[in-house]
Image (cartoon, rainbow, N blue to C red; front, top):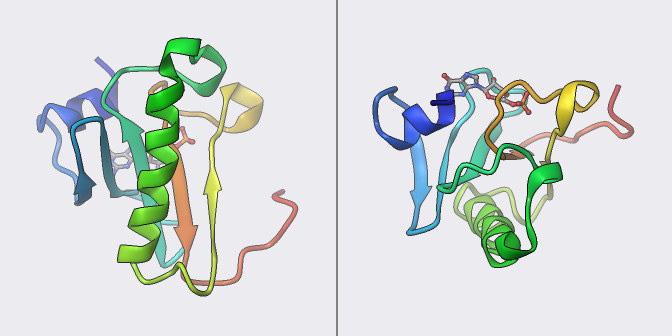
Length: 112
Ligand code: 5GP
């Protein structure tokens, strides 16, 4: 069971900011911006590179939810960033697909 599956199962505490039938959003334990929320599907897709055609609706739902969380967090107007890390070079550390929602300050581009 991955760390995020344990959060989904409420075995590990998390600061949950949004939940629906398909997705969960909670604050990152090590925030890299004033707002740093992780949006995850309840289905255990390991990473975006392993998503299937049948995951299409769920992936869309995940992005729509991330945008909704951004509005609720009050960062929509000034802007924010959504990030998906895939594999070792992408910086992925937890093998359960997650979208990072980062905002609340200007974000540099390109990333290091
Ligand atoms: P990744 O590096 O896989 O893209 O992102 C994993 C994220 O999970 C990291 O930003 C890390 O800070 C966060 N994280 C790791 N362990 C925990 C935890 O126990 N709780 C929460 N809320 N976030 C975690």
